[in-house]
Image 1 (cartoon, rainbow, N blue to C red):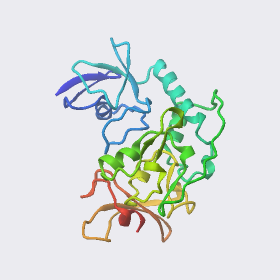
Image 2 (cartoon, rainbow, N blue to C red):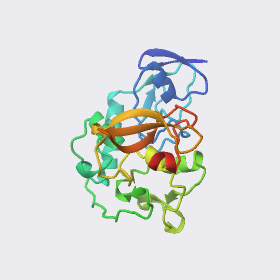
Image 3 (tube, rainbow, N blue to C red):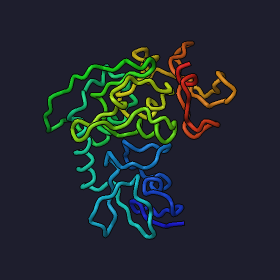
Image 4 (tube, rainbow, N blue to C red):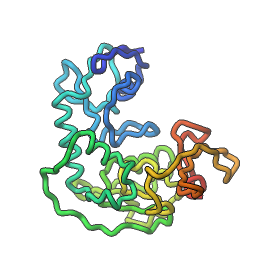
Length: 263
């Protein structure tokens, strides 16, 4: 076990923990965008940057392992400025169409923008106008909304083990797509939808039919096969609008197939 301090709170955690996991155990909130508990640490978004007393370098909480006697600061004035700038840079090329985006109300970028107190973007950019991709019968892909967090690529690789999508091109031309820009002819499991923090990947079965704050969530068991996966039914009145996973519950550990997600 390793003992360290996070914002003055002493916590003891296993030696293989990251600073982010230690902060969660200590009850300290560190904002994240590219991190998902089901995936390997990635450290792409830089939103979870923290300071260690005595170390001049900033570190990503999601990838940095704990060490004995660390003294971690997670919300200094310097970190607040940096996080605000990181979110501001993400919003330069992100279309501000929250009222018509299907992710509105459950968008991580939207929540982070509010959390850091960002009301105006200082930088200007020409908005992209890439056509929305509907080649996949279950998944809508809006490339212009993508923040390149890599969650969809990683879950398709690390969990589903299909590698249907990946990062394409480099620099400002980087995007998420398929080899040789082929149609998204994959397993249709929708795992990429479940981890997308913005409205870049959307459930076409649910698209524009309701808003998340209207839906009542009920835990249940999928009956479409004998696996008995744990699912979450989202309903309003007597109508079922969508089905989703419940992380860390059931035999499926928060993962679903095409039947479980789309019916």
